[in-house]
Length: 233
Ligand SMILES: Nc1ncnc2c1ncn2[C@@H]1O[C@H](COP(=O)(O)OP(=O)(O)O)[C@@H](O)[C@H]1O
Ligand SMILES: [Mg+2]
Image 1 (cartoon, rainbow, N blue to C red):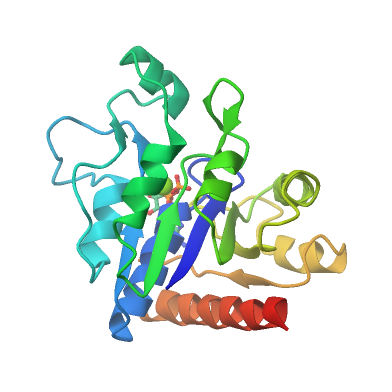
Image 2: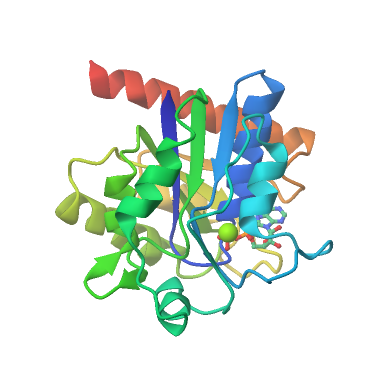
């Protein structure tokens, strides 16, 4: 079994989009896969047919049944730590790990984190701690191809190197924003040229199941597999 944890430089950068693309590409290759979002805020009490939650978008393309109830499907559309506090709860990473382990029979797990790498989950607790608890084989870092991305990617990778050198080095996925800015289209080359990342995968602006997105997702999956082999070597 292989675990791919999807982290981001922020919220709204395209983590779910990339996660769904990966799950759907794996499913189309007849791999048993579950796409999981253990902690999510802004989850309505009644499912909305027009705006699916991240968890339901990922589950919709999973070939492996996603277990309910989800550990933390929090109603308030604020940071998960605050949404949990408003319910008189604290996020317990052990509970998240147990729920994720219930899907261990799937060949691949794609697990999306909420927000950015250092987004808080509670006092003294951040997404980075969740990532550790999830024991990823691979990390996918998703960022938006817009102004500020050079810093955001550099800071995220710096945090990983200094605070979690034991974790796999992430593969960067660059997502095109809905509204391009003057930097959009230049950032991929600059990220490599400035040696912020050795390589990255640029996703197209398209549905996560579109042919061109699937090609990018497959490319990302093969890059992750190759990196895994290098780490073992
Ligand atoms: N490559 C893309 N092509 C088209 N739409 C995208 C792409 N990446 C992200 N989006 C859209 O941008 C919005 C935010 O993306 P999402 O994956 O929900 O971000 P996150 O999970 O990081 O919060 C969503 O409406 C999503 O469909
Ligand atoms: Mg998301």
